[in-house]
Amino acid sequence: MSVPPPAPGGQQPVGQPDPYGPPPGGQQGQPGQYGPPPGQFPPGQPGFPPAPPAPPKRSKAPKLILGGIGAIVVVAIVIIGLVSFMKSPATSNAGDCLTITEFTQGGAEPAKADCNDPKANVKIAKKLETASEECPGGAGGGYDTYSVSGRSSYKLCLMINAKQGDCLANFTSQTKGYLKVPCSDSTKDGELVKVVTGQADKSVCEDTDATRVAVYPEPATTMCVKTAE
Image 1 (cartoon, rainbow, N blue to C red):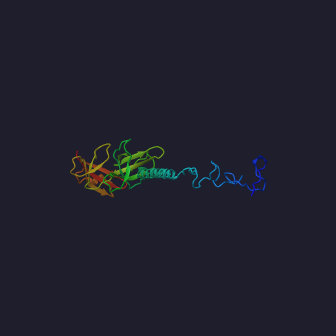
Image 2: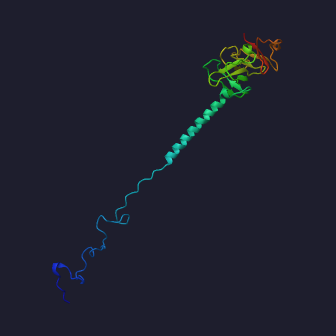
Image 3: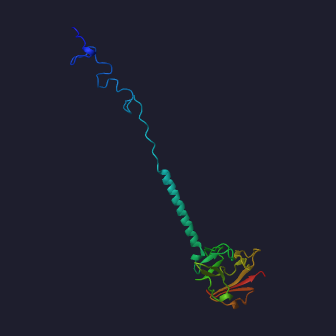
């Protein structure tokens, strides 16, 4: 079979198949069997360049943990504040006991304590609404006092928190708080030889070897104390 001559310009006649087969790369306008040209590979397909990595995800866990720690710190501060406030003598009332280490201004603030605690050395006989008020019995009464002036003004009338047979150190001190000690302790300077409740009369100590008497009108109590003097 004869081959017709090529059309002018080297193009094949329209409608005539190319006897030499399709040009390399396939027919014009159609993708060839070797895929798209370089730089046009579909991303993520086998045999082609991998897709760019996804950006890393940020976790909120550190913020949540820090927030939780902050909340715990705040709660702890609130609890400490509440405990401190509840132990303050400002929240105390008659019948409550305190621990006082110094009766001087500027000393450690008294702290509320269980009356059975050996460190609870005084009991509140009466709480007055202002620091200027007098305790029952006036200046001659046997009370120790703790006063707070200013916005929250009050005065506490204090009696020794001890019973008959107890021994004390610092009983004769003008500033130090009473300290319960064994009667064999060399620091002992006071022994309660008699304690009478319901009476505020120093005459109840006449039949004892007491050298000092503490008379508390309210609640009526008399303590007969033998000192080391």
